[in-house]
Image (cartoon, rainbow, N blue to C red; front, side, top):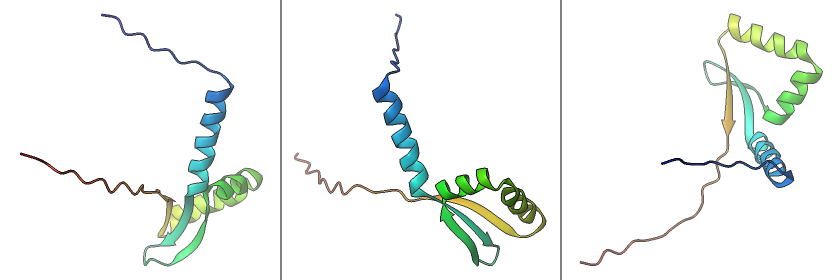
Length: 92
């Protein structure tokens, strides 16, 4: 039995893909912290990418500082939880 998978590329799928990617970037944050928990930098991941493109030296300095010190780089994402308070009643 053959299964056929069709993926159409049109303006709707492309725009939905960009929208999902942009929403994911907006809800994510770049966090630079020390091992003791002190936070040095916490910015939106979208801004971090823009700064990394405009100022690549800043990206290189951040990576070098992370390698030679006890800094931690983390990407945190806020996940929206839906309020599905559905209750199931089981009848026997």
